[in-house]
Length: 177
Ligand SMILES: [Mg+2]
Image (cartoon, rainbow, N blue to C red):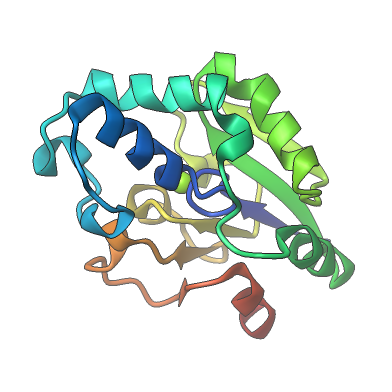
């Protein structure tokens, strides 16, 4: 059975929508998710790398219920992929304190998974056991070697990244794999 690994932030959970709300409140700004056209937010906006992480931590701590899925019916979509014969592995790099609420979020949206892997250190995702990885971060895809396959999930910050296999919705995986 093949393993399909799926990233959480910005692939299943539209975390940046809530991140931006929080940024706009703190900075009295008015940016949109579509304004984040670079992976390195600190290069584009008036914010330090530490503040960027702090907002992530805070929203998963206090506003996790407000984080919407990236697309409707992610529960059904993940279930269908499993029924097609894939092990579904959620593979997410994050700070330890958000783990409990991430698990609750996945239950809230009835996301199907066969396992849930939290990465706390800097081990590259490419080294984890999967056949296919869906991720919005180019850095997680570049070191994937055949026969493993990396699929890029389109977000405003990766539109300039040239990558052969790209999807706009998880439901498009159906025609790729
Ligand atoms: Mg991500």
